[in-house]
Image (cartoon, helix red, strand yellow):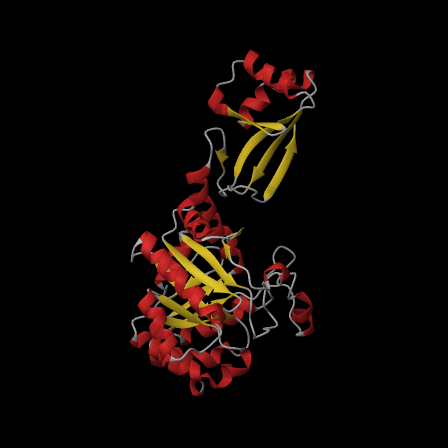
Length: 348
């Protein structure tokens, strides 16, 4: 088997699919095409508000094709991961988005898709014709012990014959070792993800006897250690830690977005968030008058509805003058898109 490489924050691999390589760069848009799913996996982390027929591009609801294209452009996406729910329950929708993205960004825009279904050849041929580059199968736990005798084995072989890179992607937990013989025999890859607790799966996970690795993360105890035992048996193997998804993939995606969307007065942090100052006042004109008196350049602030947003370092310099006219001053750090998650608020 290939030499194992230790990646960042707990990941390791001897093989990375093209989709994983782009995820490392934060260059993959996540396209959630439906929350519908018939599997009911006990470890499913999908939030309750997405467990219905909805579409999201990254964190944003999709109401039109333009929403998808604009989100991809905003982060300079080099590819897209299609997920759910179960994307193949809305096959025509998935095919539409594959064609849309390939048409807009060209054949080099890499698209992978997750599915817990073992599709027949006609479905896989339609996906290949639309331009799907990679497919990651997520068979239900009850089939892991005899996967080579199920339709998933044929689906993986057929996908590879159709020039779609194919493999299995499941949580790192007991039973996963049964899959290594199949992926080795067909030339597929095995991606193991560190098992995690979430708001929606916590009760089921506890009932299953799973425990947290520590108090600092949502990772399940011994999930990574279990993956370490399996790795030497697999020719194409990748373990993705829970910390890796946040510390590397998400951070890099936020950085790509921030570089495209940050205003002249936004500071882009090392984590890909943006920081700026906020001025609020029951008499906004008095705060604006202070900025004009202090000769703050126009490109270092923006007058918004009910507030002024400004370079945080400028705000700190003129805080005394603004406080004298009754201004309320804060520094905000948030994700770099409209309505982005606020990470920290610091009063001045």
